[in-house]
Structure formats: C-alpha cells, structure tokens
Length: 341
Image (cartoon, rainbow, N blue to C red; front, side):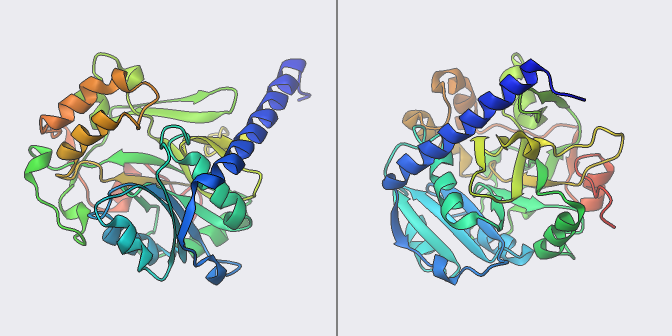
C-alpha cells in the first residue's frame, strides 16, 4: 500500500521528534558526573542494562542479582542524588558503571534524557535492557534459558525488540505491614497480582500499545481510569545510537520498534516486568515523592494517589491471583512465547 500525504507528513514529524530527543540527550550529558566508569570492560556481545535510580538501596542487591542471573553483563546506572547509600553500594560493584547527578529528574524527562545519552555512547549494537530498580524482567523459559539465548532467537527472527507488560505485585493485607530486607527475594513478600482488569489499545501516530488496569487502576483511579498508570513497555531493544525512548520505555522511535504485537492473528513474543513497587517502603516513600513533585508532569493531579499510598492501603481482593510459574502467567494471556519453542 502506497503511503498517502498524511502518512508521509506523520513520518516526517516523527523523524524530527526523534532528532530533537537525541539533541536533548546530548545537551543533558553535562549534568552527569562519572563516579565509576568501567565501560572499557564491555565486550562486543554483552547484554547491557540501563537504569536511573534514587534511594533504592533496599532493592538493589536483588535487582542486580536477578538480572545478572538472566545474563546482563554490565549495568549503566545514573544515581539521582541518593542519600541512603545506594551510590556507595553501586560504586563497589565490578559490573556497574555509575554516573551521578543532582539535576532535576522531571526536567530530564524523568531520567530518559540521561539514559539516552548513555545508550548513544555505549549501547550501539548491543541488546539493551532499560528498567527501573523496582522492575524484574521475566519471559517464557526465563528460569531455564538466559537472555543470550532469547536475544539470539530474536535476532534470527528479525525482531529487534521484546515488549513486556508491567505486572503490579502486592502482598495480602496492608502493604506497609510486610517487612522486607535488602537481599531477600521480593517475590516472597509480593505474592499476588490482578489476573484480569486490563484494557489495551493501539495509539497513533507511533503505533505503540497502551495498556492500563491492574490494582492501581481499581484502587486509586476507579473514578478516572484513563488517568491510571500506563503498563506497556518495550524494555529490551537491539540498540542503535539513533534510537530514542519517547515516554519512559512505553514507546520509542523509530515507530517500527513499537510493533511488539502481531496483527495477523498470531502471537508475538512478550515478557513481563514484575513490579515490586508495593514493598513496605512505599508508604514512607510516597510522602517523600509527593513533597518532591518530581515523578509526574502534573504532580497535583496525583495528590490523591500519593495520599492513598501514605494510608497503607490493602490492594488484595478476592479476585487476586497468587504468583506461581511463568506458564501460569502465559496461560492467562499476560505474556507469550510467540513461536519460541
């Protein structure tokens, strides 16, 4: 089908948007100071992980070990003015390169500008995993096949990306009543999730998915579900220096990288980002982040969300499902092998 004038105009606008995003990243690079730069150790075929963190000392040991076990060879992390020892801990890790900044998280597009620069500088030609410290990637066969096996198959299939839905996990009972210690498996504390209650559609002009729902939608945004957090992400990409995330990892450019779904009736491969936000630390953290106002474009619209978190909510319901195996998650349609046998 020959593109029409509107299609050509849209493609032109998206190309310029991508160039502006890359230019932003170049300008923001001066906000980063290298604290422990070990990127010289990166090898040609290494899988890299990128993350921006602030005060994640309690999560970092398991976050790093989980993704190391999957096959991440090197972590490139930006620490945004932590005061809980996160930066000191990361600086001692031999497979972590660490940059620090005191600049505004919101002004950097919530850390995306900083990571775009690092991806331009170090990610070109590598499979790159971009995740937050409260996200744990899983995918079909993740417990027996590592990321090099998955990315080798994706390369053979001509798929330069893997999509994943963020699956909010929570305990049974008030979230603040379940103590968690650094280094413990958070999945032993957060054992429940919503198996249904998700809406999905395709957004134009980039063709990315838009998924909303889960416990945050029903507990905090029941009256205005369109304001609920977005759950779709494209966290794993065979990177090129000209690529750029647009809105967190929810969408990226060029737009072909957003085609993580199949329109022919078949299933595309997909994973899940197990979201460990609702550890007991979320209650006090909500108070801090509400005061900082750095996490949403219009923070005042999210005041009720933060206030509800500070009240130590119970997200469990009679419809909640206990987390078991990846096969159970696949059977619910939350992720797919998509032909990977």
